[in-house]
Length: 440
Image (cartoon, rainbow, N blue to C red; front, side, top):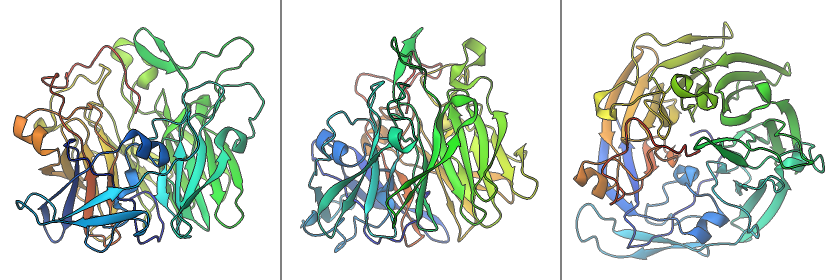
């Protein structure tokens, strides 16, 4: 899990018996076993506005375990009920929504986690050119939400009349009493049926680029470390906390970079996949949304829509392709990497498990769980983590990009994944893409 905090209770999810979304719990032992334990869960609009739409940090704690019902018994509670079959939970959790007071907030991606001070920090995005994303925290002891700051103002761009910092698309990483993260744009223009950088209205200037930020848990202040390469948004972010090196992938071009906090030095490694989502025709590639990091040796990995993996080596400060294996697996489907509307062979979400030095990830469209052994450069496909309806139908899930709710519990042995259901109208996610790009 990208968020390094010590909170022992993570957010549970609102249960709606009419919605077949699945929170899937797996146990990682010597062998990876799929526990027949599915918790029906759905995020309502009100719950999403209070926290985060895809609840990336649902694995901060084993919230589905008896006696561990979310933030507190005042905020969440467990309803005791006998399981009707072995694939249904004996205990269901009901989530009580809290309003953040930000009606313009929508579509949060990642940007949520539990810090060492016990508070739940999150960012709500906005899609207007003049309304920026806002950061909040929920205090479970006081059972209240507090506004932390406007991200555009935190970047020193208030009243500059440039396209605002409308989103944070990444998870927080805690180190040295600070939460490190990055900003992204939330205002887009549709050009030739695809989302592009938002065209500023008269009197406004273009988006200045995503920023690398931190928030001090004790000071309550933000620190700005500068802009992303080429003035693009920051779509993916992770950090080697031992060496104070941050890694990012930009949108729309897919530039991979690292930032050395100790030296205040940013190094760009250039585009990772043709022209990324800024490309047209054969030059189009969907950009990876997740960077895996091994804090022990400082390595970082990302994928491409062609299914290739790349490895950042800390000792040489360089990037090289992984030769031993790739993500082009028959089980994942067949994709045209130059076609929009899907993530191709990219992994959707990943985590690094220190105990076995493995990267665990999920392929978005197919929902297959896999693990990558960096030492042997070998990928093992483990299990399909879709809803029961999707699995029974043999079809892909509703959102062809896949889902971000994937994380490791504090016990280091349990993975939680928030899936969805297949759409009844679509027979399958088109391998050659769709006419409209969906940013997520």
